[in-house]
Length: 206
Ligand SMILES: Cc1cc2nc3c(=O)[nH]c(=O)nc-3n(C[C@H](O)[C@H](O)[C@H](O)COP(=O)(O)OP(=O)(O)OC[C@H]3O[C@@H](n4cnc5c(N)ncnc54)[C@H](O)[C@@H]3O)c2cc1C
Image (cartoon, rainbow, N blue to C red):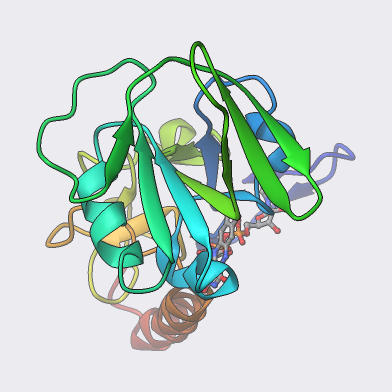
């Protein structure tokens, strides 16, 4: 049974969950206001927009990985550790002062640090924590992967018969995490929808 916002109820034999993930952002003043424009998470999605210009990577954990992707694209990569120790050499210049706030300056971002000159860059890459955008997976008692994504098989079936999942909120156990992209989400949705029809026609699955 699906309960709707207006109080309506739907009874359905199959349901495909596709409500996505919510990005929890680092708690830095000014960051949330710039999210999705000058502060981004994915170098593949946004890297080309900053080609030939300086960029920053905020946070120590994924710094070497993101800096490695952006080095051939950007004119300069600076890692902002925000006072945290780096686990490895990021192969980029490093500013280790605490980050006080981010400010938009035209089409750039100024990073105000606890000490020293501010850093001005075309954009900032941050690592976010992706959490289920809705409580549906939990309400349905679905098995999750360690990433927090709903565990699905190659056809989009979850651990609960009749419930399928597609897009950012789900991935197969063989992957460490979902691959968040529009193309992947479309493909997974198409696969799950096809599987729903096939399972209904087949009739042997509950
Ligand atoms: C800043 C940013 C930039 C990105 N840039 C790119 C890019 O350039 N290229 C690319 O391929 N990918 C990009 N991505 C990733 C891409 O947006 C996602 O991978 C993709 O949107 C995932 O699709 P989805 O359908 O799984 O989830 P979503 O796109 O999040 O869609 C989920 C839908 O479910 C709806 N919903 C949520 N709760 C409920 C509810 N209770 N009832 C009914 N509906 C509900 C939402 O309103 C939403 O429409 C970007 C992501 C971010 C955050």
